[in-house]
Length: 166
Image (tube, rainbow, N blue to C red; front, side):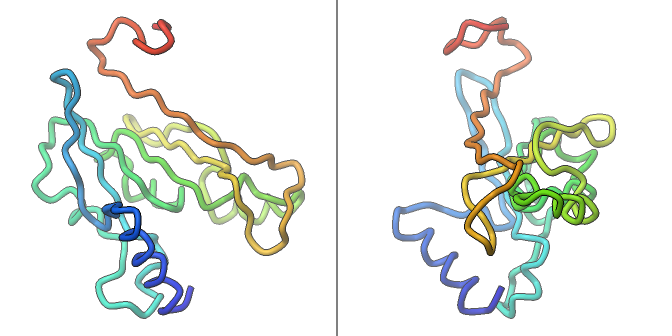
């Protein structure tokens, strides 16, 4: 990704008032339960030519309570190798589920997961979303689009207040 293109995406986040979690975290609280929501730049960001762009997990978690669960937003599932152990849950995209069969085999060589929920190490889960877009050719073959809905509950919760499920 070129320098201008990368900065354009960063600038676009300002328009709706979003605050990108670029190697930083926020503490989220609801009903007395707390969660660290952290984000890192893409693992290829340091090659985009913009100063300060790189994935930096230690910086993202700097000052976070180590006893709280961490939800990490990392563009590529491949980042789970660095996050495993220190992060409870990583949410990623990038792969588009492989997008075009049989080229998903090549994507799988680079990424630990194409789509779905996988476990890495003792305590880290990775959710790789197929997303809704595409790269290059404007179609998908055997890799349908998806919008991922996460329901996060405290271990203290007996059931989900929205669905009533345990």
